[in-house]
Each structure stands twice: as structure tokens, then as C-alpha cells.
Length: 359
Image (cartoon, rainbow, N blue to C red):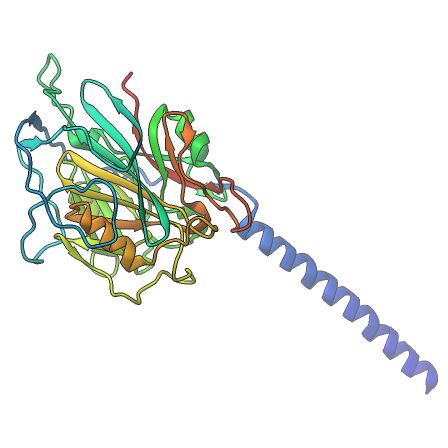
């Protein structure tokens, strides 16, 4: 009897060792597979067939808009109508202003024959906010009359030039590899298993995550849409060159599109933020805020939306924030990214949105 009991106990003991060892190995692999092991994915070669030509002139200034109280720094301008659609339309001839932006602190400027960039620092809600004002200027036509369009301004890039899971690099590294003069972090698609991924007219992922996405169309306009209402194939056929899937939309048709208590997933109420906005075709803003430091608290989504609206954005969109929030300009990181929240350093991310130097 004792021998049988001892044998049974030994069998149970061996089973428990094997079971827990297997469970530990499986759990460890699952964690590595999810967060560490890079996976390079193949490409869905569906591509947008829409081609739009655009001629851009400079001239008249647009109207000034009143800013909410508490913001210091330059302000933009925009005319917006009632909120009936979520597309900022392009026109054949666009008039933009190229006056020097006045601000408390202008951190740097860049200009070439087709664009100007002015990077300024604002201060609001106990937070440093960095704004890159990007404008298409001049007669950018080439000898064969092909126009340098506003869509040519905004580009996207994957870390290591590769689409995949856990394929990451610091924003500054990917920026330098792509000859960028200005770059911000993107939507960090690689951290998610769902959400549309379209880059440079190529559909990489069509699985809906129910997100509110930003489509950058081939004419340079912005469109905010819901993945629950529009398929990846449909938005591609509508002329989407790039689709960023994070959200939410901050400003739609010149109106704030989030509530005062709205947040993203597990985001803190006040956080480092990254956003992109359009004032008119050919005029864009890239925005990054500091946060999680003694110097900067960070912004709520509503405060970010309010700030984007104050710049004159007709459409503005929230990108991945927190430790990912990074702005790179002219060879250096402008803001103070916090990575894990305990030190100032860049986080490696899946992708960037950028403006290239003129070759």
C-alpha cells in the first residue's frame, strides 16, 4: 500500500514539474513573441491608382482666428464651416502665407524651393509644446509641368524600412535613414494586431480594430473615418496614400471632436502627445508635447484638441503618445521624450511621419 502511494506521489510530482516547466516555457515564448522577437511580414500589393496634379501659388494671408486663453506663441488661421463632412478638400490653386511665424521661442527654420518649416515652442497648461509649421510655397512645377503637390510634402517610413511586428527604431534613426529634415513618431502599428496599415499607397494590414483613422489622400487632404464604417480596400480606392490608425480625431471641420473626459485606452489624463493637423491644402502642423516631467505635466486629449484648433487646424489627429512622443528637426531631437516615464530618452517605435530634405 505504501509502495503504491509513493509511486503515485512520484508520478504526480513528475507531472507537476513537467506541466509547470512547459507552462513557463510557453509563457516566456509568448511574451518574447509579443514584445521582443521581430517578425517581418509580406506585403499586400494593392495600391491606390489615384493621381492628382496641383499647382500652388503664394499670396494672400488667411484670416486670423481667436485662440483660447492660456496659449502663448504663434497662431494660425482658417475658415471652417458647419461640421457636415470629415474631409479637408484640396483645390486646383492654393494660396498660402509664408510670413515668418512670430512666437515666444522660434527653435529653427528650414526652407528650400518648395517648402518652408518653422519650429516653435509654446507653453500651455504647464507643458512645453513643439509646433512645426510646414508650408508648400512658390511655383513648384517642373519642366514637364508635373506639379510638386502638397502630398509630396508628407511622407511615412517604417523602422528599418520593413513592415513587421517588433521591428523598431528610434524616431531620429529612421528619420536620418530617410533624409528627413522633420519627423515625428507615427501610430506604432507594430504594437497592435489590428488597425489598418496603408503606407505610400500599399495596403499592409486590412484587419479592423474599430479605430478612428486618418487617411492622407493623394491630393494632400486629410480625412478622418471609422474602420467600422469604411474598409481598408474602400479607403484605398478613394485615394488614400497613407492611413494612420491610432486616434481619435481631435478636430474635424474646424471643431473640437473629443469630449473633456475622453482618453485613449490606458493613457493618463495628462500625457506627452503627438498630433498632426492641416490648416489648408499645402499648410500643415506637426505637434509634439512634453510630459511626465517636473517641467511639463503633459496635456489631456481635450487640451491637445483645443490647442490644435487654436492653431487653425480644420482637421487634426492624435498619434501614438506617451514615451513614444518625439520630434526630430534638422539633425536633433527637439523635445524631451520620456520613454518609460523615468528618464529622458527616445523610445524605439515602428514608424514615423516626416518631411524630407530637398535632394
